[in-house]
Amino acid sequence: MNRRQNTFFQGLTLAAGLTLATQVPMNAHADPLVPAPGFPQSAGVQMKTHNFTVENLRIAHELGFRVVRRAFHWNSIEKEKGVYNFASWDEQMAEADRLGLTVIGCWFGNNKLHEDDGRGGIQTEEGRQAFARFAAACAERYKDQRVIWEVWNEPNVRTFWRKDGMHNSEEFAKEYTDLVKAIMPAVLAVDPDAFVVVGSVSNYWKPSYQWTEFCFKNGILDTGVKAWSVHPYGVKTPEEFSIGHTITRELLKQYGKPDMHMLNTERGFAIQELKNNEGWSGGNKDEVFEYQAWHFVRMYMADQMNNVPITIWYEWDGKDPWTGSAFALFNDEPRPIIKAAAILRDQLAGYNLVSRITTGHNLDYILLYRNEAGDQKLVAWTAPPPGDAPNAAFPHDVKIQVSTAGKVTSIGVLGDEMKVAEAGDNAYRLAVSGAPQYVAVPKGAEVRATSIEPFRAPIEEAKAVPANATELKLFASDDQWEFQQNTGGGLFEVRPGDERNVGVLHYNFPKAETQGTPYVLAVAKTQIEKGNKAVLIHARSPIAQQLTFRLIDSTGQTHQLKKRIDGTDQWERIDIPLTRRLENWGGAKDGVIHYPITAIALSVPLPGEEQRNGKVEYSQIVVVPE
Image 1 (cartoon, rainbow, N blue to C red):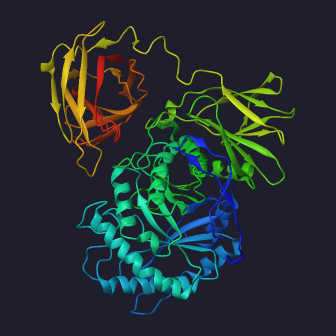
Image 2 (image 1 turned 90 degrees about the vertical axis):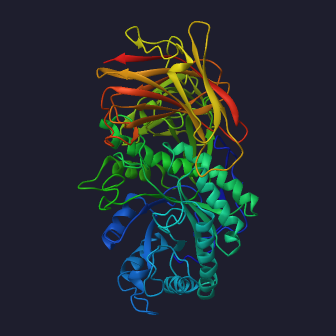
Image 3 (image 1 turned 180 degrees about the vertical axis):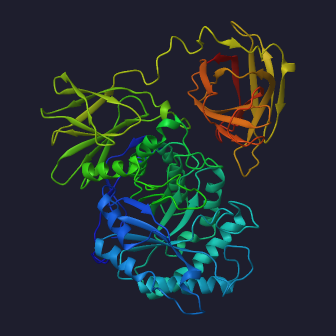
């Protein structure tokens, strides 16, 4: 299909990442290369030099992928000044076109023929103009095919931009924007319809939003580009994409581009813990392959709820020397994620998202999909709290009520038939968990859903602890704790409570900007020996916020857990497992707790711009034996 066939589409928006709005017409600048969010058209995958082959393109198409991302390395195409050799590309690009695949071609890399300073990125005018000519040569070569061109990969970080600079700096943003300003006239001169996407922003966290705004201030959005791309690492669950997507859309709106497309051009969920924890969600290590299959499906769902119409899974196979097989669909043999892809293809081919149906719990996701024939399916799951591991999603039942009689059936994420119990009066009882399932409901029926069980796993009371637990008695006096300002101010004090003493961590964050999230912490020495399975800590706050808990072992290695509390001003129990790997650094650097644990640190990051001052209370820190 020639990409110049003009089509328009409708899309969906997500307000504040929670409530899916009704379907609304998209902007008047809709492009035929950007699909309506749905399947298979929104599903993409990353390929690299060694696996971008005709055979793999055919396999990808068969699995249901319709977009493939691939780097166009400058130095592999221009090996002689002014000569562009596409001999190793033409066959694969022709096959992609024959299959109807859209290729996201990422212009990337340095070329010593034009800029040989060894720094990375592009800093000189000669380098910029030469790169622009290279980009124009690519655009002209494949201008009659379905190609979305992306400028660079993750230019906001040293890893892929300049080795001697600072991540997310204004300097990086200006250099990148200057490159885009050189590229766009050259590309549009050879192909006025060229679709160019910029950004490729690594990670969803405060510094990356600052870098994004630096680019916007420098005029990158006014160069003729058609989309902004993101790589939403930095969060543990797909559902947390909504936070970063919303922030980025607000920035687009602020800088006059509220209708600009957003694309997710790279994200994967790893099956092994990496040094920087990127893409790692934790959980039971015996179930990581299953978690990856869950996240594969939920990632596409999360993007579509936010009207992100293309999502690229990273990556095809496990030959990458940095990540090994951590993110791969294939390694030595297909993984469960491959089956999940095939089931997604079979269940939702031709369906588009209509709405999210609320159940009364904001971590329940019941998404209504519909095809042109009016057939309807729900994609149903429940998510863990933000920042938590996959197995923290609490399985419970949801009542599905349909307005007309008909058959209701369900297929699991890996193709197993799920039980759907009849509950009378066109109502059905569905067990939901972190594993998505596809629920067929009668054509034309209105659908409502209500969570039957409490969202949270029932416990007798929030501050209850096991009878065999041992209290560490860390709140006898202020002298046991050392307050550390880090990037904020405040103090730690011990006060009498209703039943026992309470430790109070006061925080006060100045207005000054920092490259990371400001935080304060309080540290107490302790002696926790081997033979325990968990440390339990009770905390309360008047606002919902993320807290951080650190355990320092005998080698000086820090083991960290992040946990978001509801902020009801009631005691909430935080369980720090000692039997699984946590985020870690320093000391032995192996993720293994080397007993005894010699210190506990309680940390409070800045909750938000409107909550720079406050307090968190802690009580009853105990250890639970194995």
